[in-house]
Length: 503
Ligand SMILES: [Zn+2]
Image (tube, rainbow, N blue to C red):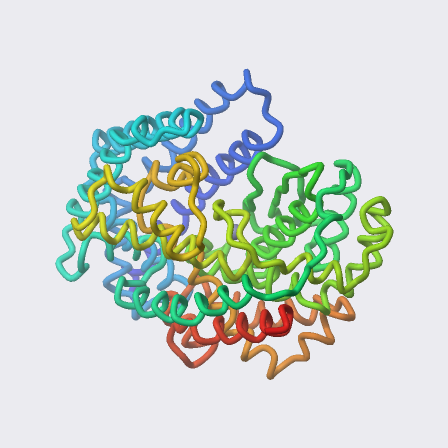
């Protein structure tokens, strides 16, 4: 490495440490705001948070910083793999933000904030027309943000938005994946709906206490080998994971008195996200590259633990005695197999976040098809609610009665477009690497025994290790030797549900 490169690198690493210190503080404040912060304390805390994040923003926007970062990007071949990954990340941010002035940045925030307020009111009133104007403003703002990036080879506006959430993903790739999903899942769903199989569900809504749910949540985290000395959990309105720092990863869940499996499976889902954060190499922190993981990578891991493992016969067998012990009023006459079946009921529903693993993909496909048509100019904003309802009818055979349980259910369109597909891609990634994992370790036997350390070690070595350093397409290729495909996921669903529903 030349002396100049070394100097620039030192400068970037020192400045990144300072940025990370501010960001770390912001993450703690954000975690606090979502969990225990009293309502009246929120405003002041919001101001503190805005001040700290602005300090970080100033360092990263400083000319010396961007100049050094671009220099490193151009001299990547002199850098270690870790620092080259940092240079890549800084370059991507630079390209995205270089023409965004502080004034434009403020304008963007105002549009999104207003959209959030309008959406909340519209949702409350179940009336899309109250959100329509803001929806349009967010849509136009997204287009403008992309136009401000002076990259010539970036493809269509929508492809660039998709790329922001899941790098390398394009409408061509998604069209093909989703075509296969429709081709194979629609007939499967139809057979399931016609099946005579009766799955018992009467015990699912028996009332339980928060204390019982907290008890099982902690036990589940320990079971999957979440390290409670390097992490913590509590409750919040919407469950989430926050990787605060190297040895501090926090998760939350939400307790519903009449749906005990809700909090159990959200804690396993968030626990999966947390393991990903906990088990990355230490060097990621030293080189400030932890932000390299994409949404799709993260969801692949959380859904692996929640669904592929968490809803398997082996896992249900592992947790059954504990579930009986913690919830005696629920489980008094429920067999292990009845619990397994109840955890895997397939039923078309209107709300994405409550969907089972088979119908879930359709919720994503519907949002994707609407977004794509909007950006292609073949769908007008006024028609979005109508098309939404038609597509629910077409794919799932049900229709929302109002906008609240339809087009207004998700918060995502208050800040942008292109986010949803990453949720579905996660399932496809994990099905692909599961097929390699099962050839190398005996997953079923490890899960039956509760040996999550061995399983997590495999994940750390093969799935987590390079996630921050590779693009998703390089990453999945490195793990599986293949490019993204829906096939493995669809094979898994067909096999599992054919057996479960005696098809
Ligand atoms: Zn998640």
